[in-house]
Length: 120
Image (cartoon, rainbow, N blue to C red; front, top):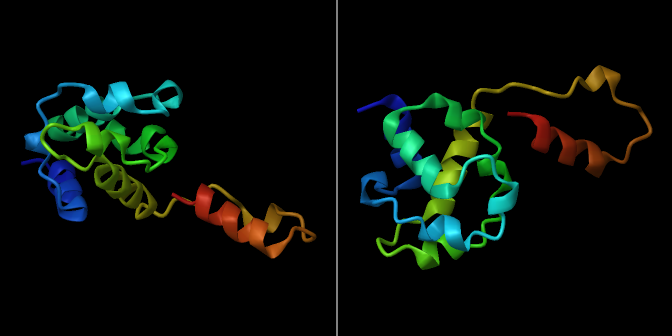
């Protein structure tokens, strides 16, 4: 078993092999037009061990609306899988904001929000 699949299954608590790629999750996703990978493609890439899925924008675009899980005939909760991929990315601890270059007059909440969004 590849490390990515085992880590996603550990973090999400979902069995990715339950997905048989029917595509109902992707067909009902309200954010599918904004995603670079459809939800069922994300699952397939994780199963194949393709680490490029960690750098995809799809987990960040996911609205966590649970439409995919409601439509899934195998009850795979894809929102948990997307959350697991976000956690894997965040745990790499790549900081995309250089705090020394940020203007000093920003509201604190904007700074906290930006660091949460752009770290990972």
